[in-house]
Every structure is written in C-alpha cells, then in structure tokens.
Image (cartoon, rainbow, N blue to C red; front, side, top):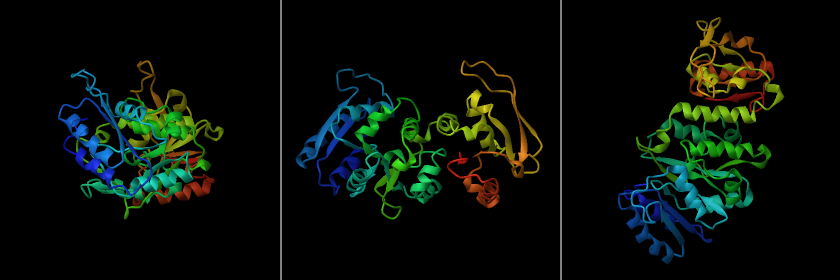
Length: 352
C-alpha cells in the first residue's frame, strides 16, 4: 500500500538472489494512490527478462478507483491466491532481501517441509529497536518454541513456508495482528517434534534488512489486542493439559494483572493466586472491578490473593519480563521452578 517510495529496493533485491531454481514474484497493490501501480508495471518486464515470473494485481486495478485498502492480511492472502509456487516466501514492500535469503530458506524447507521458517534480520536503520533485535537473535530452535507466548519468535517479514502449511492454517485473518494469529494457528496444528519453527541465517549474516518507521503497521497494533491473542492461544494449547487444572500467575504487577484480565472467564477461574517477591505486594488482595463478559456486560468483581513465590503450588505462567532478571526475576524463577519440579515448556511458560 502506497509503496512507491521503497518498492524499487524491494524488487531489486529479488534480482540479487543467489537461488537458481524457478522463481515467481506475486504482487498485490492494496489500494495505493501514490503511483505504486505504474512502478509495478514497469518492473514486470524487468523481472521477466531475468527469468523471474511475475503476476500482479490490485484492489484498484479492476476499475474501482476508490477501493479502500483491505489491510495486511487481506493483501497477503490475495498475493498468495494468485501465485502458483509450492513454497511461499513473504517480503514486505519496505524491506530488502539479502542475496542468500531464498536459497537458504528453500534448503531449510526441503529438509523440514512442515516448518514455519524465519530468517535472521538486521534492523534498518541500524539500532532502531536494538533490544528486540538482540532478543530475537538470542533464541535457538528450542527458544523459538519455549518463548512462543511472549510474541512471534520468528518475525513475519522473514517468513517462508510450504503452501500446504499456509493452506492448513487457512491463510491470514484479515484483522489487526494477522501475523500473530497465523503464528499461533500454525502452532495449534504442530507437534514440537515436527520442528514447527526454524530460523536460518545469523545476526552476523542476516537474510533481510527489516525497515522500521514510527508508522510501521506492526507498531500500531494495540497491546491489549496482542495480549488477548496470546492468552487465547495459551488457553488452547496449555490449559487443555490436565496438569493445568489450576495454576499461579507469577507477577502481581501490570503484566500479570493484564494477562489474567485477557483470559476467558473459564480460564480465569483456574488461577489460584498472583505470586510476587515484593514484600509490599505479598499479602494483598487483588480485585478487578472492570472485567466484562463476551457480551460486553460487566462481570462481578474478580479477586485473587497475592502470595510469595515460595508459596507457589502447581504450574506457573510467568508474567515478569525477562529484562528484569537482574532484579531477581529469572534467577528466582529458575530456583523456584527447580524446587517445585516445574519444567519449562510443560508446567512453566513465559508470557512476557
């Protein structure tokens, strides 16, 4: 959408790929009004001259000059629908692939066809989101799985997958947070042994220049929407385990309370306590008077005790940021988990 300012760089990066197999570019112009269509049409013969097949369309290309943009999920679904390849590699119009991106992801999918394969990336401009970039690249394959409820552990602009994987999920939901929803729908259908999440490349040898601006769409989805999607996925995949008949939320601060509020009423009733190490919070009674049901009606006040972490019993959902490990966070969590025999990825999950 309105990508004339950056599309040349994105499409030039297609021609720079080292992959020598058949390649098709599918472009969907989502209601642009800035000359994007003319730019795309100028690129089509250039791509075809380089033996790259190309198919392109747009919501305003069929005669409706006033069609509104349908959004990210809408545009991606239509780009996939008009394409023909058995493997899909996504590229946002404002990003740039580095030369080995397609080659390495095709090789990864050949070895692990049911995986959602991400790639290492470098933020553009450099350092724009330094902490997030460092965290994303700190995760090994096990970490991609264990941190799945914190956020998407492989970032959407780098995704590649088999078309069969895309079809099994049913494509993107055409609502905000479409990448997060697809990520969790994919994991709903995947067993850990199937290697559902992979990343290729490294921070030193990235596959993509991932552009960030203050108006980036991924920066504008509100925090509550993202948390509700993560909480719903947690309910589907974790609370179906009988070991989680009751559980404790570690963290009596903003994040722990927000997570409890994001749960459904049925799941919320299984939370027995908030746990914290802050003596000013321990012993308090947390009450939320603002919870509403699925019909929007105000619910009766919901109350939970705040206990010390040494008094935790049973499984734990950790709602303390790992960035606060130096404040007693991660080390204390690991100590308590060992004492209770909790296993990360089974009876202990990180939410933040």
